[in-house]
Length: 307
Image (cartoon, rainbow, N blue to C red):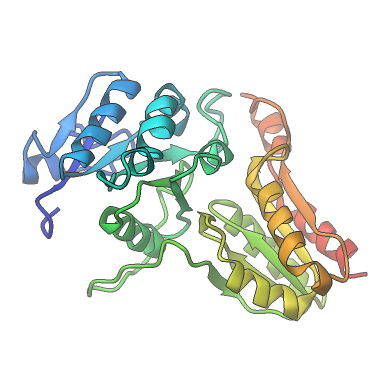
């Protein structure tokens, strides 16, 4: 916002309250109420306003207090944000960032614990990224703001308390590149967002058991970084996908199709995808845990694939 006066923030409680998860804390005091605009509880209205602002030259960052609430703005995101560059014959660009917390929290109930990545992945004209660390949250956010394309940035509700040292100098990450988290030889594990931590927890157990998993945080959910993914598949010949998205029509289903279409001849075993169960997320903590992939399931899946 210091660098570019066109950047502004819209959303519920993003101003002097600092956002429901304090992501915009201090921005209203620094940049004023017009650049950090508190909106009514009207997702379709302020998302549409953000699209219009982008059409006229601003670079809005639109916060959904919860990504589930942005279902109310699906028309604006799909029919306006994703399509207007194309339907205007290139007369308009929509440099918009749509961001907010999503995923399964700790007993937040079904409506506040939705996995909506694949809903937005299906929209033509939208780029989709998911951050998982402090470092890539900053780098991807800056890249998204500077992009000429509309970008949906998924932040996981349980990752806001992460702490990490990041460089003082400026850095910007690519919106289309995966991150090699752990090189390995025996199997490729593809994951993103919070599941990165479940995978790395499982990886410690697997290493102790003699396995050498390669872990990739795909980060870009649309488009997939098939260069990085493909090179890994050609090396390990086995693929496990671990996601928090739903099993039917989820990110893993799209990724499975892409790998089978492009790298089928390099596979020595069928692709396995571990996903959340196709049920509304329960409120009860024990049941909620059962709906999401846990590290022991990852360990068991790798052992079966590497037999």
